[in-house]
Structure formats: structure tokens, C-alpha cells
Amino acid sequence: MRQMSAEVHDWLAGRSSSADDWPVEALVAAKGDASVSVVLPAHNEAATVGVIVEMIRETLMRRHSLVDELVVVDSCSTDATAEVARAAGARVVHQHEVLTHLPTLMGKGEALWKGMSATSGDVVAFIDADLIGCPPTFITGLLGPLLMNPKIAYVKGFYRRALVHEGRTEPDGGGRVTELVARPLLNLYWPQLAGFVQPLAGEYAGRREVLEAVPFVAHYGIEIGLLIDLLELVGLDALAQVDLGYRQHRHQSNEALARMSAQIMLTAFTRLARQGIGEVPDSPLLMQFRQSAHGALRDVVTTEIGVPERPPLAKVRAFQ
Ligand SMILES: O=c1ccn([C@@H]2O[C@H](COP(=O)(O)OP(=O)(O)O[C@H]3O[C@H](CO)[C@@H](O)[C@H](O)[C@H]3O)[C@@H](O)[C@H]2O)c(=O)[nH]1
Ligand SMILES: O=C(O)[C@H](O)COP(=O)(O)O
Image (cartoon, rainbow, N blue to C red; front, side, top):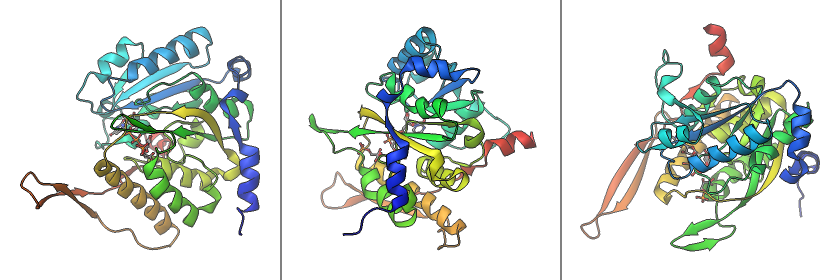
């Protein structure tokens, strides 16, 4: 049987760690003059964002002085996300109120890019705001390799992830897009990245100078786009992953996940096209079917799948 490549084997051994390997006291001591920003992208996350903000404020800012800046990017929410986040102690910026001279874009990647632009820490950590339970180790784990090893530029979280459906929990059933789309794509075309346990994890951190040097895909292609572009920019040895334990979040419907999958595929195809492999379809449509209220006929839902992207933030700053 063919085994994994020696490069991936060595990377897994040398660049995977556990959050417990990075005690907060050691990180505070290693941090020195560096500053750390945490950015939470949030679209309608009033139910979960407050608890995450309170934990970061209380444990990582007040008690340990590890995090210097905490920003929630309100990504066009229609619920009380902004109010809840502010009441819990975060600075809240609205996605469309940052870099207002640029045309607006929607999506998660856009929220991250705007959040990065609205902060100044030398190290930036991104944490999804829909997490159900976020212990401090989610953040200390991500910061550990960056603060303790100057060779590391970008750290991705991984975890066990459950699928909770109709009251039933499948302990390792989560990450459907990861397993059915992202992992096969990465293994086929970027086998160097095959060692990432959760390539789509929304919890990751990086050095600002590196994050500002790559483009940000506006929508859900952001995670796969960052991995591929950072591999090219800094090489595998500067990437790491940390076991954060267990993660639970709000699940999306299969219909929504299919749109996410199409964005991820298109982001990957854009990268392949840049390497001269294949072509990217122009404004493709995703046609989906919904059971109609009138029996056998199904309602058709069409969505345009676009993956607009922001240029490296450093270029925008230089232009300004
Ligand atoms: O337009 C948007 C959409 C989402 N979000 C926020 O982004 C985070 C993750 O979004 P979510 O819809 O919960 O994504 P998941 O279904 O959890 O998707 C997984 O896979 C995505 C694609 O790689 C990643 O972006 C996610 O972080 C990862 O958890 C949450 O805080 C959202 O509120 C925004 O800020 N703006
Ligand atoms: O990361 C993923 O694969 C998608 O967000 C879907 O996750 P879920 O299957 O846990 O909802």
C-alpha cells in the first residue's frame, strides 16, 4: 500500500501540537513587545458571540494580558449580534464601515479582511462566532506556535467535530464539506496540504505581515484560498496545526452547504487556473431543487457562484 509522502509525514510529526503544549503563562512570557489581535466574524450570531467575547475579555485580556485587541466584525447581521458583542466588551466594527472607499462585498472572507484592516496586532487570530463553547485554549493553542517559534507564520486549529441533527449527536459526523469537498480537492491537487486535519477550520492565526501579503476570497472560499496561497508564499514548514480538542457549532442546511461547496471548488479552480491548469467558468449558476408545497414538482433555486477576492491588504495600504 502506498504511504503518505515523507514530506507530509515529517510535517505532521514536526508541526502538529496540542493546545495543552502551550500554557498561557509561557505565551505571555514569550510575547514580549508583540501585540495580539483577535477578530470574530459574525453574521447573526447573537446567541453565541457574547459568551466568546466575555471569555476572551476576562481570561485572555484582563487576567493574562495575552490578547491586546478584540474586534467583532458585524457581517451585515439582522439580529442583535452587534449589541450583544458590544455589551460583552468587544469593539464592534460593521463590515461595510471599514475601507469605505472600496466597493462593498459580502461574505465571511470579506468580514475577516475588514477585521484585519481594523486591527493592528502583530499576530492576528480569527475565531468563528458561532462556536458553542470556546475555551481559552482555542486561542492559546493557536498563538502557541507563533509566539514560541519564529519559523511559524500560520497556525490552523483542528478538533473532533460532532454532527448534531434532530437531537441526535454523531460524535465525529461533522465537517461534511471538509470531508466531501475540501479534503479530496487538497489531496488531489495540493498533496503537501494533506496533513491538515481540518483545512476549513474557522479558527486560525497568523503573522500580520504574512496575512497581509495574500489575497482574501470574500466568501467561504477564504479558508482553502488562504491555505493554498500561504503554502505558495511561505512553504509548508512555516505552517502548523494545533489540536484544540472538541468543537461544536451551528450547522447549516445541506442546501446552504452545497453553495459553500461550490464557492470552495471555484476558489480552488481559480488557484489551479493561475498555475495554468484548466479554466475558471465565468459566473456559474448553481441550480438546486426544493420540495414544492404542491406535490411532486420541485421549486428551483438558482444562485450565482462568484468568488470575488480582495487583494493583499498590504497592497491596499501601500496604494493609500
Ligand atoms: O457572510 C458571512 C457568513 C458567515 N460569517 C461568520 O463566519 C463564521 C463561520 O461561518 P459559518 O456559516 O458558521 O460557517 P460553517 O458552516 O461553520 O463553515 C465552515 O467552513 C467554512 C468554509 O471554509 C469556514 O468559513 C467556517 O469558518 C467553517 O466553520 C461565523 O461566525 C459566521 O457568523 C460572516 O461573518 N459573514
Ligand atoms: O466545515 C465544514 O465541513 C462545514 O462547515 C460543514 O460542517 P458540519 O457538517 O459540521 O455542519
